[in-house]
Amino acid sequence: MTSDHYRLAAISCVVVIVTLFLSTNGFGGIFSGVNLANASIYFLLIVVLGLAVMRRNQILKLQAEIVRKQGQEIELTHAALNAHAMVCLTDADGIITSVNENFAQKYGFNRSDLAGTSISRVYREGMDDPVFNEIGETLKRGKIWTGENEEIASDGSKLFMHCTVVPMIDHQGHHTRTVAIRTDNSEHHRAEKARFLKDLLDHLQDEVYIFDAQSLKMVYANLNAISKSGWEGSDLQQKTIIDADRKMDESSFRSHVLPLINGEKTVVSIDVKRGELLGEISTRLYTGDDGQTLFVSVLRDNTERRQMEQARMESVSVVSHELRTPLTSIKGALRLLNSGALGNFDDRSESILEIAARNTERLLLVVDGILDLEKMRVGKMEFNKASVDLVSFIEDVVAMNKGYGDEHNVKIEFRSDLKTAFADIAAERMIQVLSNLLSNAIKHSHSEGTVRVELSNENNFWRVSVSDDGPGIPEVDRNAVFESFSQLVSHDGKKRKGTGLGLAISQKIVNAHDGIIDYTSEVGKGATFFVNLPIPPSTNVLEKTTYAMNADRGVAGVS
Image (spheres, rainbow, N blue to C red):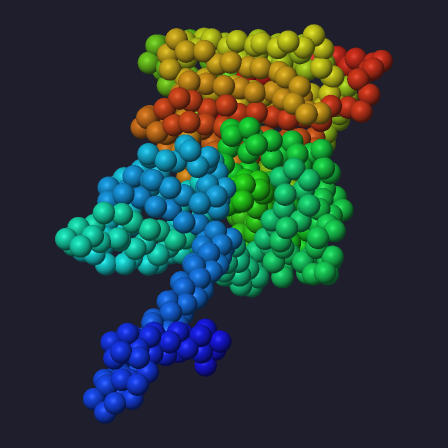
């Protein structure tokens, strides 16, 4: 017993004695038989009362201690939730009444801006989001919903949240409020996704390179890419994509991927040779969940396909060599007949001769194209390069093709802000390239349409672009555009004459100039083919080369 207990017992005894003294006429009466029994009863009652009061005080103190500890536990729980979770309170209709600071920071909002708005704003599809509606149905049944969901922050970035949503029910069984506790699983989700993709990509036969779009520093390379580049896995973080091939030039590469950055294209491709491997590198632009912009380049081994194409070209080349001599003879004979040297023919005969002459000319173009491809393949095509002013050069090429445009009732316009633009080119070969682009644009333009030719400076390259307002080229046909003998089905259904060799030859000619030929297109709105030619290191060109154009040649190149 404590001192308080003893003090209480003493006070009780005094109270009993005083009461007995007053009621029994002094101490003598207290110790009489009946009074002694009464006194004992009084004493026991007082003791019991005192013990009851003492016990009550003990219970009150114990309850106070329990309440204090519970309060501490609640405070600790609240602090833990605020430190590690996102808490959101809403009413029964999903209108936000309160959020903690973690929630506001994670989703990129101010707490005051969230109050009074619908929680659906953090779901991908808003009020129509299937998970949002599933949670709503679960809460209506008075049940707790838990699971993982992909949500969005204020800047549109993705968040992968594990959510527990608890309905608060009043005494009448009505859903009045909702408490939602979220934990961020984004890092774990990204790590799992990255691990899965890494396992998938590591063992691909294609070489895969992923690198930063700004610095070009490597982020990932699969096992085949690391091996073919001569790298070690531990060295990857110190490498850039330029280190993958000693022949690669950073300026040329940035020009190559510029259409991706500008949004002109979704993929750019280029043919490469690495040792005995003949391949194609396709590059795309990708933005990660964290907002980092990356390039993804895939090098695919096309050696077998190229070998098959080469065998086919060699066979056709042999036939072409055999055809060229008799076709030239036939062409000469037809010209002789058309000249009237052997007499005059009636209109019907002249018409037949004209058709025969045109078809012979077309066959010779096909044969010449095949032979050109074969020469370029074996490295026997001559490129006598000299410094040429592209402004004057393009004006002359446009003039050359004006007659072909007039035949199709199509105008050709040339525009440039440049007064001069010197480049080292093989003029005759580049005439072939630009004439091919112009003839294709004219053929695909509407009657009374306009083909636009432009010359501009694009990141250390002169860019010559040829645009039309024709049917355009679907993206699914991109890989076939520069293939030999490729003749795509036009989106408007019209058939246009061509050999299917013009763009294949043009690509090889441009590649021989260390340039790039490519295109952008939107179905129904036309296409723009462009050629990027390197700007010489020195723009102070002392010698200006003139070139002669054979007016009798007509449209140089084949389509």
